[in-house]
Image 1 (cartoon, one colour):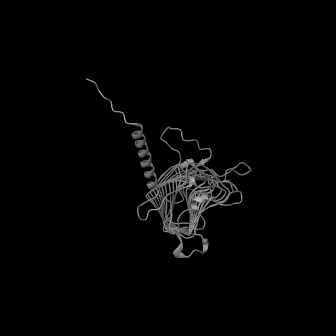
Image 2 (cartoon, helix red, strand yellow; image 1 turned 90 degrees about the vertical axis):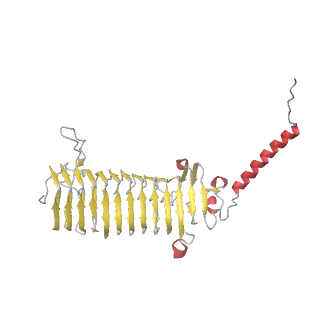
Length: 405
């Protein structure tokens, strides 16, 4: 019995190929032009002659700009002047490099009217995500936002700028900075003047001048961050209330780990590890604040005098409460050196000194339930006279005190 094999004619095969190509092309065009009511197309920056041109292509009512992988050198600031916007890169593969040497920032987010913008016209809801932005010591800030509400910066690397890494200037409503790497900037890593209801979470700060400034603000939540190797102070908070600094690692700042100054009140500093800084927590002008469950591990020794002698004391101990501060609760903290058990060799301490608490003319302070171990002095009383200090139920181990246990 013979078997017949049917072979399609060339005309039929050509028709099938043509039909498949036409079908794919139709699907691509449909994906490029949204048909969903209210939808706007995403902008692919790779299809524009410059990043600024891609930003300028955003509709008035906002949209999305996708920046592809690559290194993009700029000599003038990129300016974003739209709200309801997402600017998204491809992670560290997207590198915006500011070549400007005249103190200009890399990326500016502001309304076209700048400082003159009316209250009802401020930009809202801007998200910057997943790219790297660098500068040089003669450039300005990395990212500068002015009067932008609900700005969200996530997964961005900001490094090597001559100014601040990120400056959010009076971004009053709900600024958020999370999961960012903020490193090697000549000024402050993250500068937040005049902000309100702030979330700074899960970031890494390395070797800026200071890590964080919050001035003239409200309601900071600074949690789960790593602050390391800064040339000045770590966290500096001034004229701010109702805030929490909790669960952070603050290590090896040349200055102080945390500073509260200029009429701070109602702030909790809790569950932080504060290790090998030039000073610990400095309450310069703070009221109604709690310092609880922190671990203070060693201080850097101050530089020796020209004659080789060591100064008798640091300007600040692990915790200093100054004369303009009052009504402070200090409880459940551990002030310690590098002790790791009987007979064990301690960590090298040539440039380290365990420290305790210094009281300088303060009043109404409750110090209870803390552990002081192997310190030159657990509590040191300095002039002017301190008033109404409760010191009770603390454990002192090889740690003399100016206050009776």
